[in-house]
Structure formats: C-alpha cells, structure tokens
Amino acid sequence: MGYKLFLDDLRTVEMVYTSNDFVVVRTFNEFVNYIKENGLPDFISFDNDLGEDNEGKILPDGYACAKWLVNESNLDLSSLNFKVHSANPVAKIQIESFLNNYLKFLNSEK
Figure (tube, rainbow, N blue to C red):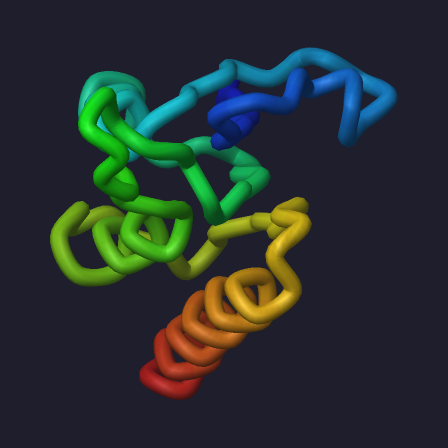
C-alpha cells in the first residue's frame, strides 16, 4: 500500500485537504530522505516556499524537490500524481509546468 506525501513548512494537511492521511515533511532534506527510504508516494502535495534557516538564508524549495525527483531520484515517475498547493502563484506554475512537461516527455517515449 502506498502513501501520500505533504510538503509544507508551515501548513497542516487539514488546512489544504479534508482527509489527513498524509505523511508530512517540512524541508527538502526530509522530502528526499523519506522518499529514499519509502519509495515514490502515490500522491505528492507541494508547497514551494519552505522558509529560511537561522541565518535568514532561504532554504531549498518545492521546485528543488521536484527537480530532485526528476534529475536525481532514479525513480520511475511515469505514474506520478501531484498537486501544488503553494500560495506563490509563479512558483506554483513553475512546479506544475516542470513536472507536467517531464511526464509528457515520459509518455511520449512509450
């Protein structure tokens, strides 16, 4: 049985979805490590802006997570299901376009 992954540094699942049967990860590193240990989720919900470190440096964002999935995870993403729930409209389009274009490419290879 698969799992659903919720990437967000601040929001709770209940703020976005009526069901709360998600595994919550708050950072790029948690995202990467959880997927490495548990495999590709059935569904991923992406936030983009994942906060700053103690020195005010912006942390890797949801787009970085999407790029890791495509470029470094070595997972079969052909069945990837996702939604971008980020409040950042430009980043939302960036993540959606990147992943949808990659999925389109994978499907054209079949």
